[in-house]
Amino acid sequence: MPDPLILLPDFALIALGYLLCRHTPLDRAVWDGAEKLVYYLLFPALLFHAIVKNPIQATAMLQFAGTGVAVVGCGVLLAYALAKAPGVDRMLHASGAQTAFRFNSYVALALAERLAGAEGVALQAVLISVCVPVCNIAAVWPLARAGGHGYLRELVRNPLIVATVSGLVANLAGLQLPALAGTTLSRVGAAALPLGLMAVGAGLRFGALREAPWLAGGFMAIRHALLPALAIVLVLVLRLPAAQAAVLVSFAAMPTASSAYVLATRMGGHGGYVAGLVTVSTLLAMPGLPAALALLSALR
Image (tube, one colour):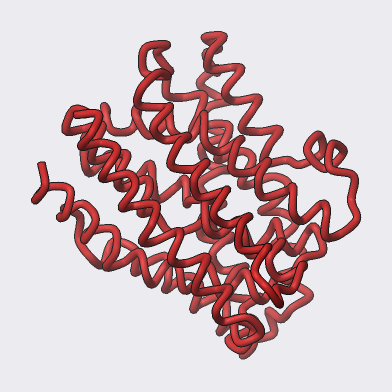
């Protein structure tokens, strides 16, 4: 079981971004540029390299990957269903829905290695490969509709979707990156998490969640209660091996993707609301993720 404080560095980076933006000369103008850099270069490089560097076996794409897609798909449907509740602000829902089903890929890969070594990284790469495109497409859909954007145009132009689909195609085609390209992508991608988290903090408005607190509660209940519970039930019913079970449950209990804020901001959504959701999600995952793994261990 991982240390309950494993996500504390992520929250510290969010807090650092908040302090830098509000109490130093590194104000909002600086972070506007940083958000674009993360969105158009750093996160795409991180996702592409993470998928390509871990070869995917066809057999691993069956029951295990299908279970991961089922968990994510359930999250998407539940998040979309909240839009039908009375009094829901369309833009707030479109901006925040993604936080109910997206996940922090970088943290997922790091934790998978702690849980199951090289096998865990390979398993997590399978989930990233099949679930990130699904999550990003589902995240873009409500934002494109609420903002009046052309949906297909947004999909084709979205750098996160382009990077993940390209990485999946390259992986399945057996593409091996040259050492120089792999090292360069690794170093570019390594900057994505700290700068992305600080950008979340820079855009944080603590009062933003008060605009729709029950909606925020619904998104977080899906992300940190319903999806981990569903994953535990599925791995027990399907009798997945220990490594697969641990990786899948940790995947379901991950904090939401820090790039959710950047996506919402770049597509004209409510960035402050999403930044608050990302921060709350990180806080909830700190005790929630170890608790989900402990429950899985107790029930196996």
